[in-house]
Length: 305
Image 1 (cartoon, rainbow, N blue to C red):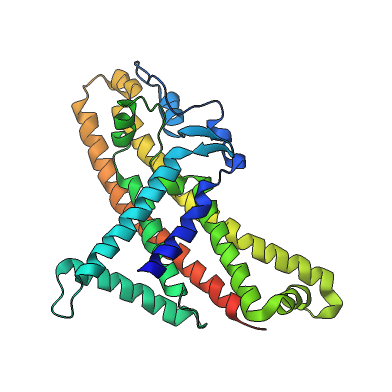
Image 2 (spheres, rainbow, N blue to C red):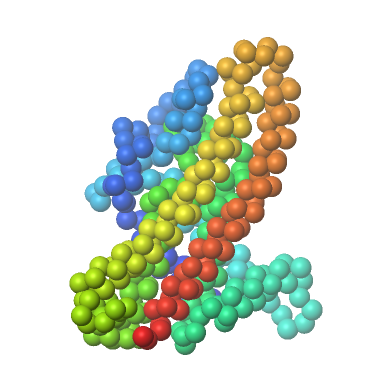
């Protein structure tokens, strides 16, 4: 459990560092303030819901909502697994313990089939990534206005509740994985061996500049693809939920059809339910893909060419 905690802490530690390059969408916005009293237009509604709660710090602006919900989900994961670990028994397990054991065995099987090194950290790392990313993604299934409206009651003007729909979070995760790749590459192969792999693979010493260019692009593409894939899928899913909310319950639609709010509320429920069921597959799949690519990349870091 302590290994699991250390692995999880290592992953979300980097999230506390602000990335100014990804704060353009909330430039000029603050965190606290009096909420709007009038109805939103479609454009204002989406803009408001895509705006982060930004707090200035000595390090720069921080998306405090993304940091809060990502760390909160991390603690939900750690405390839940810790509670079941304490109650675990050798006898007939309960439903909760059986469910946790199924998840652990599933992740362990993926690691055994994919990872060919000897490190005992990879399985806890893979489990942490899979559950944590899934929990952050799962926030997208909450009603669009539920937590933001609760925040407005506490004078929190802007709030986004899906951490994995924030580039700072997804790149924080992917950069952490990238640092682990570099760490294990140097640890297993040595600094000289890692340098030779960068310079002499795959075309030999004669093509050193070309080899180096290809390897640098290959390595840099790993964290970029990891971060953008997760961000893109969750951002799109979040946006579709907002569009469903606007299309079925927006002020403009009510005026156009003038048949009351109830039919549109029912339509919103049906469309939202259909998309939520489909999106549940997406958030689970994205957590699995992030975990599997991490295992593959770390397995590659342990291989000597």
